[in-house]
Image (spheres, rainbow, N blue to C red):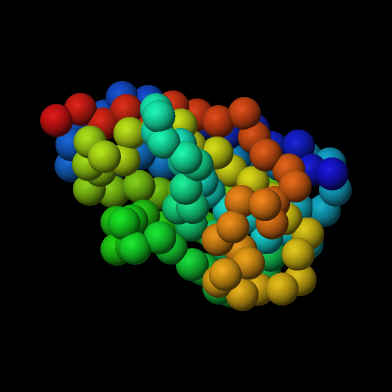
Length: 128
């Protein structure tokens, strides 16, 4: 099991940037795939981005591709989500998640049920 704590959320104007962090503790973080998901009020949780345990491969939702960058530093047991050109529709609670899956396939790692460990979430609010 991995314990995850997100930070870096806040209020930003449209067009601005935020960098979310996800600090992991417990089992070896470098053996886990990591994902970011978000949930807006009244909507279902949706996939944002995922990164392979080695950091060598990533996937993004179409809605954030080219604006968001997922990364990780396994030496620091920390994952990141750099968010640029933010839009009001990016407003949501953002969650990081970890999965022990060894199946690095888009249909698998973009699905929330693949992930067994979740952080508590951090609020991102983008004003227009």
